[in-house]
Length: 343
Image 1 (tube, rainbow, N blue to C red):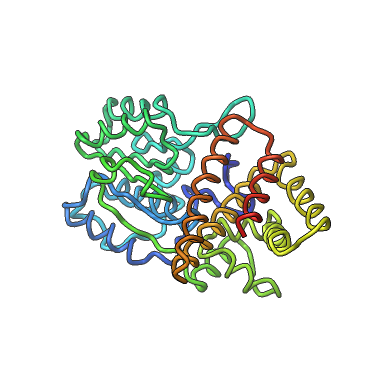
Image 2 (image 1 turned 30 degrees about the vertical axis):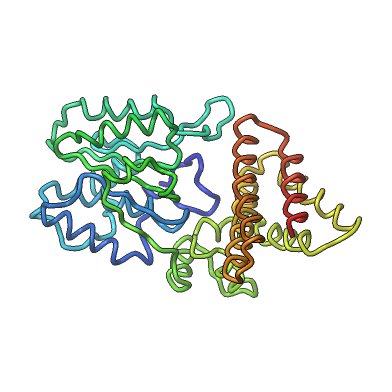
């Protein structure tokens, strides 16, 4: 039975419950063989864009390790989790004493995830390792993602990574490794996952029950950029319409486009619009960065610097807007005005 999990997109399966992984066979083989050799690293930094399977891979590997606690006796490949096994059932229900999943905690008042993984959450890892394992099995911590660690939490994790307990394993997920403390990165073995190719994308979406054979299929695959979560936002959250409206706003001029801007801002600032607002923020920042990159390639250094500076400014304003709960519609209007001015 699938549990309701905060933060899981409509149509998605929580990574801990996902029985299939598509498009990352080399990474799976590396983890299985590294573990079986008995020389695996105690901390693995799983890098890559959001929504491509990093968390699913982490839970899949954790299941493998906990199911085969002696490396030399483990299979050479990661298999699909056995839904009937005790390990799989304990992981799916959150009842495993050998795995700790650190993510942004849910605010009990709002039901939404808080803005960061705090030091209080990391202290749970200290208690986790302080408990005696009745089975003598591995202790695994999944940090999902480490990008969400605030400064104090990151420093607390660093202390544990510097002196890891015996038979401990850290699976550290990151969408943007450059944002992590260099000292955390230096203590982890990097494992880079690439965005999914079109065929693994189709298989992953088919596994979730989506048959991409309609007129929008190719557009969804292209716009999702190898991310299953982005595809779900396009399919289930009106992402295709938002992307089209965004293009119309950028291309338009005069009073008519002003109405389009306000309509788009109203949709993105409506109640319960968190997912589509995050989608738009990523779409927006991706466009600015692409404009900077294209200008640099064309040799227009002045234009490239202008968009690069704008990117930094916009990122800061989005962060402040969320941190101080500023009026979201005004933030969106301001961002669109600045981008149109820069264009």
